[in-house]
Image (cartoon, rainbow, N blue to C red; front, top):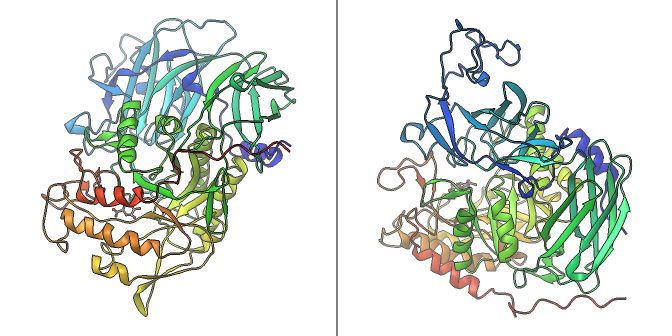
Length: 617
Ligand code: GCU
């Protein structure tokens, strides 16, 4: 009965050369390293390269690198930096919103944190775990290079067992947020390029052989069997593994193979399924002989059938909104549980049951809180606009980000869609690139829908005739696309003249529509940037979308105003994209009420009762 594809999955995992790290790192014992870290702003990367642009650590010439943290080799040595004498930055947090002088800064900042730690056992393995660091990070402990990570929005860990000391550890991290043409994302985005150690940092202690991966969800095609994959990492890969759900007095056991992998199938008669109406989570324990994990997990199925998106076998309409990982009230990268509850709280005020976390993986608090609150999620990697499709390193980078995201959130019931891209120009190279990502997503996790925010074509003969025939749509589960009729494309009066030709008979999700409005600016409905203009766009767009037969939901752009370096109109934008339904001041705009009322009409009847679990054969 196990439904998890092992061979192709393990093949892909090894191809992706992901580092072994303890699963559920931030739920494990260890040391929280958040707080004030010393910082050195290094625009010329003096601490990384010598004047010949040779990287110090590559040349293993430990004379000049800042990572040495000031241990003079000899009295006479010339040291031209001092962490002890340097100011601090808060971690987690972006540097741009912490210091005026760093608001626009793109470059290198060196972070240093000193700490003591005595492992609880001499056999333990120790990992430095980062929730994220934008964009590149080089990590050093006590002068030793532990590793390098690329990608600003996914977790990564480096093993520190060999170099950690009980006292006086010096952890130095070089973070660089410069944009690159061959990067993911590439150089042009419509969001602020917040740099820094933007999420939690933790020293994690794990047994010599630990659980490196565990995927737990309903076996595909069933709603009463749980499929479990466990992978151990360490010197003792062959171990007894037991999975228990105490509340259901369910338990199952097996033994891992020589590759440390075990597959289990757990019959779960009478299990209550997770849904927005009933976000039921079960405490699940996975115990190996040397390691154990406990997590709160919901069980639900998500699939498409014809025009329908089926949640636990029932049609669902996705009442959504897009959101950036930013706390507008503080004006910086969101990272905390409080930030997540702020943003998800606003979405619930809007009668949403769904959010598109744009355009990159958000912090783990979002998915874990969405599990609890009963909100469905679309998660995405920042393959955004025109990335370097023919560059194999760019593809490898995107694949690594996707697998790091799936590895982190695969057990979150709230996550129903993996999105591999946003608004990418159609070309063969692009479609080939994105197909690889779609295949990876299906191999790494065959239990969710896969899609992308695709583009719309306009009939040259009739600008009100919109055509959705992106070739990528052949390989996605949804026809999801962005449309801006009434803002980038004509005025609001054009909206109800629009007619659609949609090539494929799949559920349609409008992944973006909207218009800018300054909160508090009132004028006629044809005055751009007024609340009335934005309200009119919503008033016209929603009934227009209702005419699309396979329309099954939308995520308008966007929950709240957000910072963007592309938005420079004085006294109107001032560095903010104003398409939020909530202003940067937290105040709602008129269009908020239009969407809220529209969603009130789409509440699932009865929102209260979830379908009874299926009868046992
Ligand atoms: C695009 C894009 C968003 C952007 C929005 C806008 O569609 O996906 O990232 O912010 O439109 O122009 O406001």
